[in-house]
Length: 185
Length: 198
Ligand SMILES: [Zn+2]
Image (cartoon, rainbow over the protein chains, first blue to last red):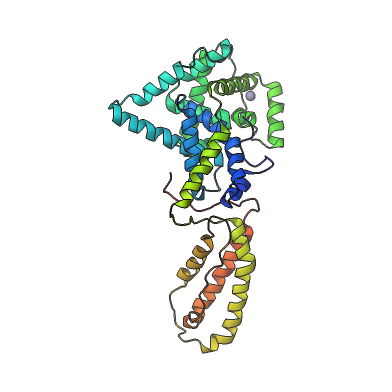
């Protein structure tokens, strides 16, 4: 993934958001192009591979409709992640109500991650992928946010609704598990 | 495998990999990596994990999503909704530099002319409400990010203020000005915190 800070790129997220608010549609396109794939990756890490694009689209629609609630003290991308996660949880909640299946959340994760076997590159990558399947949902989310975005623990904590200290523990436990399951790591 | 003794460097690896460190920090990590096999392996594992996630993620159609966003927004605009309360630095600066200074100057003139004639010199309540409403007026800049001049209603109101109130008022105006000037120049974002969405 490319730059995600929104500050080192030619045009910052902040500038694009201002342009969008002023009615410049191209700014919206630029923001979607900049962040869509990262949001997709986050959605996949939450175990929603089947509905990735739909969820990414809903995330952006919600975000742009409520752009005035975006706070400048957070990154636009992590704000998008927060919206995406809310959508995933809402979806699971309604699924659960429909199916009356309290285990649907875990089921989803298992099914989605299993479906990736054989899709992922070389042996070592498959080992890492399988090791990631073995993580708890919380460990996997924290690990993904830390690896893909390089976020500090306090920002991850805000996103997952936990403490920075707990996130640090989740990350290191995840890393330890993966190291143990990957040969030569 | 041995442990890395430089926890700070090891903790910096994800941010280093994601390109979030500044040049000096990144250089420090590079120097550490040259002599730390533990961190070199860990970084390699993080890179593999990223590659795995890249492969596992379907490529989404950004153009289609952008079109959906723009379409949904156009639809929302047709619906009668209240204008969002947006505050931008541009708005604040504009207001600060023009309106506020002009207002403050005119108040000073009015004050100097009218203080002898003011009624009531006692300990009247503070005028925070008045300033708050001015700030609120500034915040309703509208979706276009265009500033709306604050509705400083001084007509008739000023004469009703005690001199203590006026002093408080002017002091607060000064503070607002100072705050605005202290804003980092790069921030030009909506600052309103609304609990509704999240
Ligand atoms: Zn090290």
